[in-house]
Picture 1 (tube, rainbow, N blue to C red):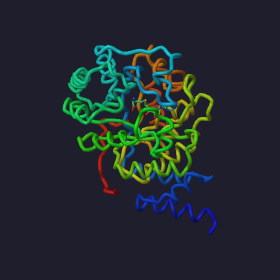
Picture 2: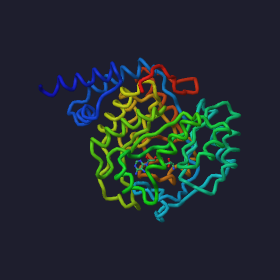
Picture 3: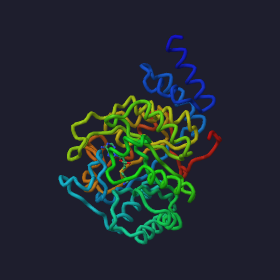
Length: 350
Ligand code: SAH
């Protein structure tokens, strides 16, 4: 059989059954001509998630982190960066500003900064919930009782990327961390009733298409509600600073495949995609994405949240960022969502 009809069959299976085996996923991840895959993902996005794009206001509130992940600029061992930590009042001010811009979800993200107590975080969540928005946290690995306290304080969603589902690769990139604990966190979050988001980095050194296919199967097995994926961007001051980064096409293929496998989930066009490619958001939105996360932190801190280079600078003018994003959305014939943008479960594919 020549390659084309085989790929077409895989895409048809995905579009109709929302399932495909690892070998089929690898073939699609490595195919030369991905347009039919992107088009199928766009049809499925339209059918199951609609034309609405959800805007989530991202507030990066602390760049302190005690972890030493090899890829991340915020790793504790990186003494080349200036760190910041917002005061609770500053976080609330940023949230208020995002709400005044019409955003219906506030995403609070930070490094793993142990100087915030769970009680302090609960109080921040509580105050933001009074603004009639959904609250997402992305603050790393915690115990089940800590996740429970934050849920009881009103948190709706939690983002914790598995980063890679390959145990060896995970171990080699995360000194002192355990793959098993990361998976435990994700299952605890689900059990506690969070809308649970995960995802992976794409283009990590040593990562193969087979590993990426396994990441997709892991997301489906978890029944994740949100999947955030972006290219690995090498960062100065980290052990991976001289490695090659991930490529945009592979990210778009992963997003398209995630949409086809899990038709009704929320998929952001990740910030890193916008940094890698000035058209990254638009490309993401036509390859399965239905979420964008404008950065609503204070301008002076955005550059300091230096997970990877290029973040918080250039491409999107901070003042006009929401307008720029809205224009891109309208140009694609899509709408800005007016609701909280929770996953609307339309199908049981697990
Ligand atoms: N402490 C939180 C938030 C981490 S930062 C947590 O553990 O979940 C958010 C995401 O940035 C990470 O999950 C990772 O996937 C991504 N990231 C880190 N370093 C990166 C890099 N060099 N290039 C691209 N993305 C990166």
